[in-house]
Length: 202
Image (cartoon, rainbow, N blue to C red; front, side, top):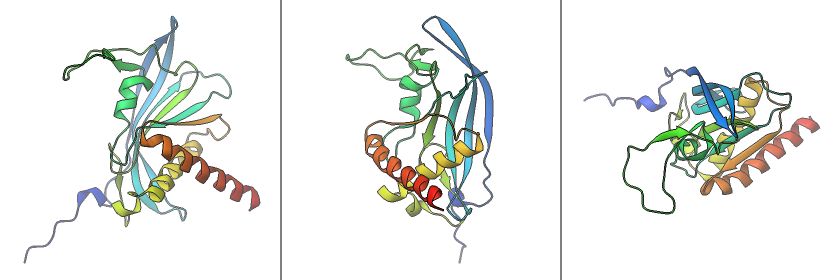
């Protein structure tokens, strides 16, 4: 009898990888230089056990002012990566669309995104597990992430761990979600506030 091949998406051999590049965006006539990071971060549970590789793309302003805000943004879902928000309005580049008129199929023209918020805040585009490059690892499986409460927990864990890893715990923090992401926002805010309360009480 043939052995069942293990699902590579949950293989413990997968490792987090991040690629860095220099980017820029021009807003209101001012060019902003950015350090971009794209890849995956190893996500850990409450017992410090690896449970996922969480995909993200982050844009950090070079030589930022003190207390520069940071925005965590995601599309709807479950099942939707951050691609649409990223290339539509949040990143340094955007695709050209003729709203509200009909737009044909890709490829689309890519231009400077003068509507981005990167002039006033750093942006982290998040891909919940099961979208983009985000996959379960170790003993974790899809059911640990694909549900309302599970989704809120994993997104919140990523935000907390990302802030700590990049020394941004003292930055003003915002979350932005599109479609289902607006409902996710409420749950994530509640989760993060509860965690902060527990930390203050402990």
